[in-house]
Amino acid sequence: MSRFPHLLSTGALGALHLPNRVVMAPMSRARARRDGTVTPLAAAYFAQRSSAGLVMTDAVMTSPQAVGSLGAPGIWTDAQAESWREVVAAVHQAGGRIALQLTHCGRLSLPSFQPGGDAPVSPSPIAATATQLRSPGGMLEPAAEPRALELGEIAGIVTQFADCARRAREVGFDAVEIHAANGHLLDQFLRDGVNRRHDRYGGSAENRARLLLHVTEAVAKECNADRTGVRLSPLHAVNDMRDGNPLETFGTLVRHLASLELAWTHLAHLPDGTLTRRLRDLHGKPFMLNGGFTAESADAAIRDELADTVSFGDAFIANPDLVERFETGAELAASDPTTYYGGDARGYIDYPPLPRDAAAVGAGPQLE
Image (tube, rainbow, N blue to C red; front, side, top):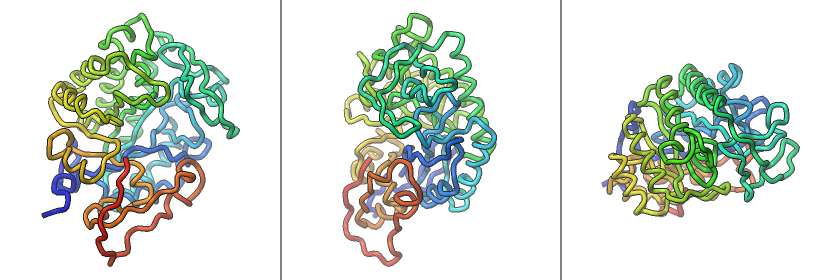
């Protein structure tokens, strides 16, 4: 019997047929050029990890206004899209499948990143007071106070996501994930700790979910629903995020998402098993789960029908052959946090795979 018969079994996410249920989570590695194009290093990095059932890219920006950090890749220009073509080709040549994650950072930005030095945008003019961001000059600065998006600007945000999804499809990505987690713009609209609007995009859980649902419908129209996913983080307090009633907010949302017949809904940083089960029951189907999983706990989550797949983040940084290590019980290599963001090949594509004749030595700690 396989060491992890559920995690390492074949599966499907919408139109995608997976050789295993181990997903490489989206992780910012901040190695794009200043113009938002990715370098050939990215092709090597993702191809090395293509034994995952599905590989996901960094969070990719949908417009100049969406940018909130140094080294963030984009796909809103032709040049950016073309730079991703080599990445897709490398993963496919290695036998893998790859999804592009689309985002807008919203208030998680600085005027120095914004066109014309403008204030970043958010549903309401509430700053992420606990968050510091690295400026284009490399200095840490507190997140700026944002301005509230005008009602007439919101349709443009939807169009930007749709246009970028079209570019992703045209360069060959297998799927697109919409980043509505971790305090990014769509998460800011969802949660009442940040969204204090009094129009049709604020107030009730139905209204706060409206922008994400519009974006999801637009992306699914470009890529097909069975190649579209959404990432959520209902309880994650990162970037000064909070919500008065996560079950109501996210329960309302997942009921709507279920009706769209998406390829996946990705719940991140959700240690509360009770909330996961209640959202699953409202959603009507298992999720992709992320956050603190070991191979053993991921296998159990799939067995118990909480998850179809489980995504791993940090463990994939130092273990490009993570799936093989799970299969053989080999120890996991440790990653170097000082090389996570920015830089060159060091800490990016130079982690060695297992020697072919490596003996199984028992699985080490397996991170998010």
